[in-house]
Image 1 (spheres, protein in one colour):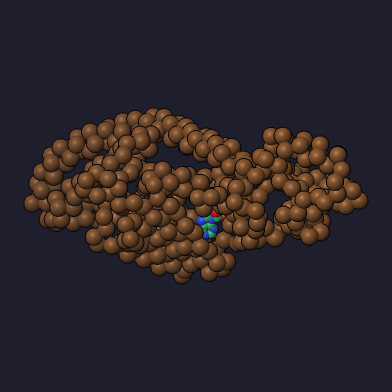
Image 2: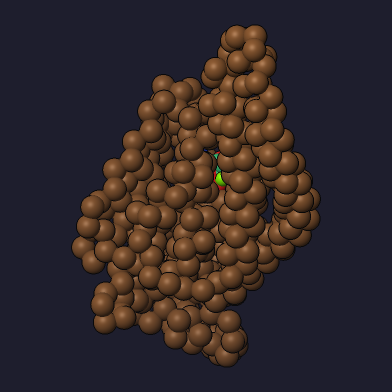
Length: 387
Ligand SMILES: Nc1ncnc2c1ncn2[C@@H]1O[C@H](COP(=O)(O)OP(=O)(O)O)[C@@H](O)[C@H]1O
Ligand SMILES: [Mg+2]
């Protein structure tokens, strides 16, 4: 660090003034990228970091010193991330002011730590997205409850009508047998009078089963929506959740790929969480993977396993991949490249916030036109009730 060497009154007044300034200020020699002076607030903030290259990521630092070096006009409202003392990432909002000082150009670097502010904003965005989702679920619940009411009514009268038809059939069948004994075997709608007793009741039974399935599917869907509105935690078998999701998405899987691979660890420890939310995460990720496949020949590999004291869920696809340009934005709320086909841009965002809520983390690797790999790590639940 180099302090001004020319002894003048003005210099002392000036440094006194910037020392008392409450925001951190650093004065740079832009040619040599030397720190000329730090005010008290900057000294408090930077602590041991007299060398700023340790304070920033390598690429960020390179951009930063270039900006200072080339600074000939005021640069305002820029952001840069930095490494905190505990190793976590923080964000600074900064401005640069070039000033002529005793025939020399110097640059003031004024900054503010906005990490907490950003986190608060993120949390607010996350809450909003959760609220939007809850709101959507509420309206879906409303619609499905009236649809299911309608459908169940229809199903009930179909079942009643079928019962009456079945009773009628027993009487009709007697008549058929009488006619057959007088006139010999004959055809009814292409069915022999000898077979008709076996076939017609079977047909009616399959209609009955169909009606029951319609009404069960609607009930299951309603339960699914209702569960989504709850936020209870329980001990979860992740493999079971995955199997259920695969059943729910069976039709979509079939539409997008003929190469779907499921490889579940047989002794996967359980986790603690909300089943419905985890189901939602897996549905989101699996749908993204399926939607990324350009043809049915490309595959999806869904597996679970153990790594250290965590379990992992890996979803790998051989899809179109994610370009480097958009990679930084994919976890942002409402970021989607699929708006035209109904994307909401909330899938990855909500998935990440659900996984973080469970104390886990989500990692992503992708190569354009090769595919994408997403791994979720989740803490196991042990018998003492601790993670
Ligand atoms: N497996 C994947 N392969 C390729 N791109 C993906 C994949 N998963 C996510 N993406 C990209 O990330 C964006 C955000 O995903 P998401 O939050 O689920 O929103 P949405 O699916 O509604 O677009 C997608 O629009 C897509 O561009
Ligand atoms: Mg999605």
